[in-house]
Length: 351
Ligand SMILES: [Zn+2]
Image (cartoon, rainbow, N blue to C red; front, side):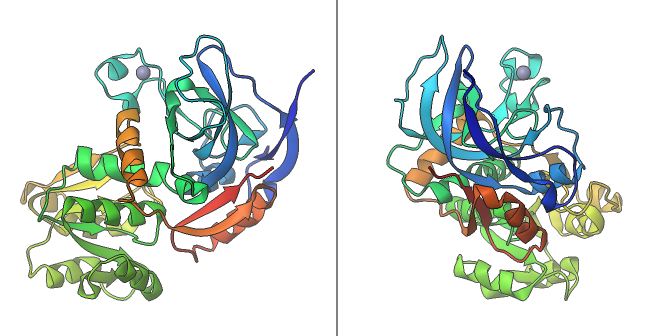
């Protein structure tokens, strides 16, 4: 007999109201796969865009969103190593790569030719259960705050890959973190501080900048880009030098100013464009100063292991803005659409 589970799903893209709390079939773990009982699932900007129809994810309908998943191991399919005990808490690596294409063989699993994301191509964590390949689970061991853990994987993983692996941010360098109130903005501040870099932060409202001060960013190093021009402010703060690294994920109209804010031989690293993927810039601001524009996508399984260790050591402090129960997923999306929060919004998936 088929077992059922509760899930928040959508069939037709649209506003938050298209998310329905329904019963669907519980997935079964296949060969090499693990069944995870979801405890909490972070909501990402991607979820809102996919729900709106900006992404065609290829997942069968109804669509189960959710790539930031923590839960407990509920059972294994055949052919697993079973190195984590049933009942133990795990975080899920959201990049499901093939392991055999050219990019995977070169160690670049985030640019796998056939990868898919949990909650996008594959059914995600807006449900009581989810199935992933066994290699995608990482033990949380003694880390018990599952809401914070659900606010952690994609934000800190994506930011780590951007700053550490791709941009190679160094101690003593200056990094401009765009949109400090976002999940990855919060993560970028903490990672930059761990490295020993100076953080200049931007946001569109003063109260978000004040929260960045609480995280240790100097009040004089913060920019409200709705009040003053980003480039002018960066030049004023850095005494006309510019920053070594720009941490970019907004795109859109402000991108040109972000490029211009990079110092000579500096780099801009980008993982997306929440405002728009179409950007305009003056190419002279790139070649005159030998600026590198670096793309970055997700994080590797190895990086995810590294940062989860740092989380357990208390080196990272994910910020949970609000927690909604799974059956209020539509309400949670409506809240996120207002962009009034700071940090991550998390769905709790309780018994
Ligand atoms: Zn691959």
